[in-house]
Length: 186
Picture 1 (tube, rainbow, N blue to C red):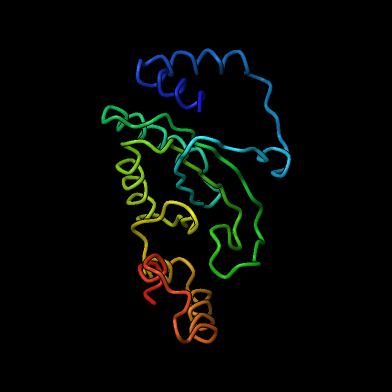
Picture 2 (picture 1 turned 180 degrees about the horizontal axis):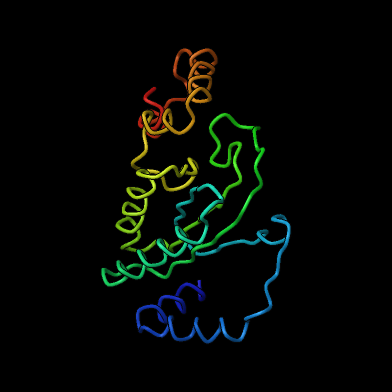
């Protein structure tokens, strides 16, 4: 909880850019590459919201810089302290029918905001922009504007197969809830 309080203090007093640039200069040349189970096995204690999506690996830097600039532009409306985490996965993932990293070398962009006022405006803006691209949302995280049409466009025959399996295995709609109703049109 202290890290969020301190991060927000730095962000709202405009010290974050200065200190992060200083931190970057001190860290420069010390990049560390780890397997995901060693790098991301942490607990995040403060309440937070996450929006995560994948993009094709090709042209990685352009979308990364774009979303950082978007955050900086919207910061004035009172956005909370935010971490933008970038990960990569190789092509060939095919264990899910509608997973965000399905069958392509992907960059994962995870935007993590503490659960305070302001994050929804940023997330809705980000979602609107990724909806216009070939990005794929992580359906288990913040995902408010995507619907059946969007998923069918992104996953094509895999979505049709998923939809058929859903109808076959849950014909009475026992697992339908407002979220799945909106997302899958079930």
